[in-house]
Length: 128
Length: 150
Image 1: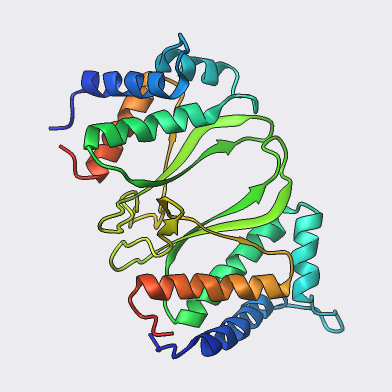
Image 2: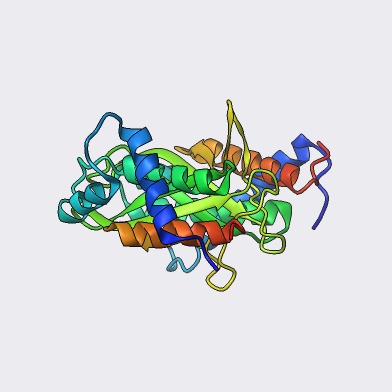
């Protein structure tokens, strides 16, 4: 059974508060803003760093990361690519052997999608 | 996988591999009488003209050249870096991630100051820098495979 969604939601909000302090926004509202505007002024690192911080907090260990927001012609597309590597085993945990892709690519425009992504990354890391 | 004995041999193989892959990817299928592209001109043009297709080709040449140098195939991701998020404006920097398809190991993982990074990053603005990128990337991958004896 995968990790409780409420626990992931809480970890995301805690991670976000740590990253943007002393902002009054929540991570959920940050993602809503991103889905509405998506312009190049948006601080996309807040979103990606919140995801990686929440995964590391819930997994109880650090990983090596690469992430990037994907771009449409005139704005962010709403999608992000994440590559996660375990520094101890050196394994690329986001490797998909079927598609031969090293990255997981997903839309991040609301909190439920963020919870789905963290849940997926935790499964990649072997966290129940 | 053939063994690379020392840095000089690796450099030689990197140069040969780069030129071979450049010709295969860029200069194959030239019409009769058509002048072959020269590596430095091609790389500079890709950068100065901010042509995403040509920049992608530069990255692909580097990847294939590394595979030829170390005689193994990898799963790759690359980033053609841009100075500006709003429009494609390459600054000449390319980053690469290589993963071993057999073990799933990230072969570009290395120490970067206080933390681990998975990106191998190079500035590639001419033939010499491209060959250096192939050499350094091959060296890093061989080290992470435990095959570097140089």
